[in-house]
Image (cartoon, rainbow, N blue to C red; front, side, top):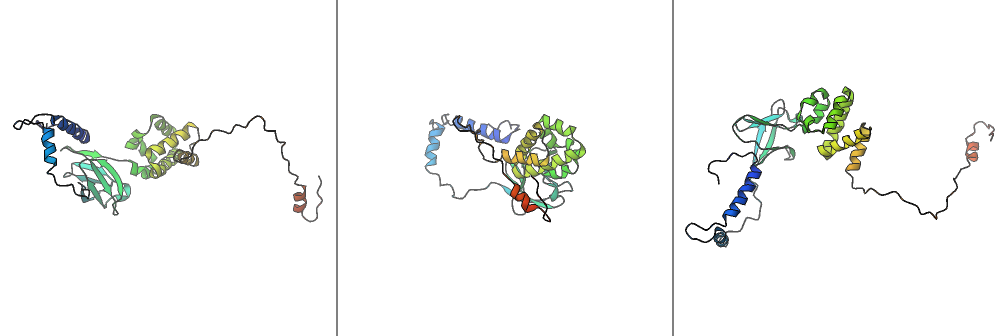
Length: 253
């Protein structure tokens, strides 16, 4: 199954397919014992030692140093990964698994997560979301980042039509709400706000909160036809007017 050496683009998908192929191969008779591999394997299982009760984390933790752009390299400088602007020129922890490169802060909390790069060519994985706050201060550079391409086409066109200040404020809201509830939810809130022509900060935040709050949309109450119509209530404020008069003035109705 591994000869010749396969070229893999998606390691997870390749491993899933490999496991399926192995399961099918269990239906093949053993070349000497003639029994099926699956039946021989069942006999082997009886002699297995039990699995350890504690989960084994097949990951490596290492310390790396970032450059002035808050990036670091692995695999002898061939693969570059981003962190977040505040970690420029500093040391961060990195958790390496077969599939992921997870950047951690000093308390082992996740900063950003990348799909692990493989191969001997120069490659880079850039997650722009942690840089949103910085981009909101330089909105002209936003169009040339990976975040711009992640936005829906209509939202790209909206930002292109915004003035410098409006784009700056919109990106600030996008950054704040992305930290609060994720990039997809923040993007949807801004899209809905633009659709209703109410894309100021307070309106976008209100839409975001509504989209992310478990409140059922209740249908309007329909009153039965036998309820009598109440006459409008008109309060008489003359007594209050008398109390508010100054210097013994005279109230005229």
